[in-house]
Amino acid sequence: MSTVTDLFTQPKTIVHPRSRFLPSSIVAKKWFPVLAAAAALTFVTSPVAAAPMPAALAATPQTDVNGDGVADLVLSTGARLTYSGDISLKPNDLGGSVQVLPGGATLPGAPSALVNQNTAGVGLGMEASDKFGAALVTGDFNRDGLADVAIGNPGESVNGLANAGTVSVLYGQRTAPYLRALPGALGTINQDTADVPGVMEAGDLFGASLATGDFNGDGYADLGIGSPGEAIETKARAGAVWILYGGSAGLTARNAIAFNQDDPDLAGAAEAGDLMGWALAAGDVTGDKRDDLAVVSAGEVITGTADAWGSVHLLHGSASGLSAKASSYVSVGNAATQGKWRGAVIGRFHGGANADLVIQADRRRGGPAGSGALVSVRGGNAGLTTAVEVIDQSGDAIPGSPEANDQFGGSLAVGDLDGDTFDDLAVGVLKEDNRTGALCLLRGGTTGLSSFPATAVGENTAPVNAGAAAGEGFGYGLRILDITGDGKPELTVSAPWEDGSPQTGAMFVLNTGLTGNALTVTAARKLGRAQIGTPTAFGPGAPFAGNSAVLDDNLETPK
Image (tube, rainbow, N blue to C red; front, top):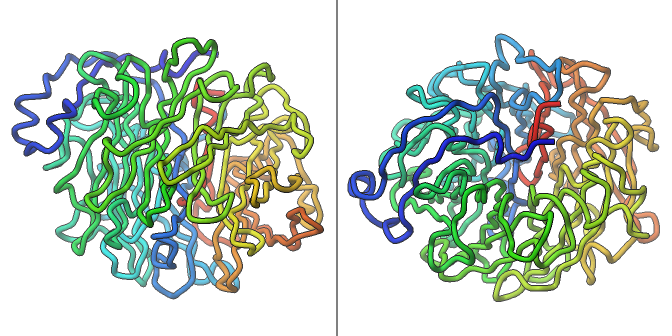
């Protein structure tokens, strides 16, 4: 299997860390020599590394797009073409689309709506090579009580620059299609957008990962944007992350800031192939009621660590926003894993004021290739600590056993499923049993995710009882959110190849409770195209916006 870094061939540049606060006109002229373009990528996808709704953003407006008081589901219907034979569905899903499924006691609570790059004011037009919706997050950028949506399209070609990447920002409204371009506000963003640091170049993959959080504590949601293909000077694919802040007029590029590993206040140094910004997650790790941002560098090399790559910088929130001076760090040197670190989520798995970080890794050290593992990192007032635990299916409390290419942890979702104030973790095992797919439910507690035995859930598990079949991908997308308005969160699960076709697919809404000390599924509903009610309903992948991180099958090479 070829490595991710083999797929990126374009050296590129980014602003020197000390120039982050200069006007964009000065930055572009002084700090950004543009290098010659190289060959375009044949495909690009990246994990959704979106964050759980942190404490500062836990209110309904962060997830209620249409303002009816009930959280809504936002999902990508066709941005991920992950299996050979998957197609870009015309005319609605060519290059990807985004669907809004309004919440309600009976789903959908109102007619569903579809947004794509043929929608007025959205994107740059539909192309088969686009990955519109490869990253997807919600947050109330203008604090009007309606959730807004940021949509990553890292495969977008702009002005002939292949895979430069864009991010589209749409604002919530009460009537269908529930999302709109807001006049005078940022719409489609790239590195050539005014006041955004940097210069757009081929292979940037700008928008490959996204996360929302309130980083400065002003009540407006802010946006983190990952660009793992970005070069730092001549260091190809070193990667970087951008921060844009919300305000009364919506998301703004004024005071936008970029971070990379050549910043002297960040651990390490920018190197070719670091892939900084491969995944992002937001949450309050430091316990100061401002959100912090975890930035995954999937290709980071750690001296003295063999056959393992990856690190996470946690940028700490402050009254002035995220800062490199206040940051903490963890790497594969702290954890017994092999392969790359991929996705990340943040949740209060131990309870209390300090959230923890969970990272998806290719495998536990010595485990089968691609079996998957989780790295749980305890949070504290100073940020990430050295209290690190590796969790996989080889543990006594985790159902099943690690097998090659299972991708345990390939999707992750955070939320309190049992109402005990501790966050729980839903873990997708994407390729379990010949791509049938499965879930593992980990319950949080005073000792974290190892507090209680875990629970296995599949399509043959009662009361799901949907008839599991190879290739259906049960668990590919996950979301924990109260979409019925009953005060209790549901676990929403996508099976994008349900019934054997990428043009069908299904979504499952699971209710959970406790049997003894273990989480169990107490009720289940299966929704197909007819119930959801839009022409395309599900395309390949169907990852959900919000606190679901997805490990895409195309991370290394098409299957």
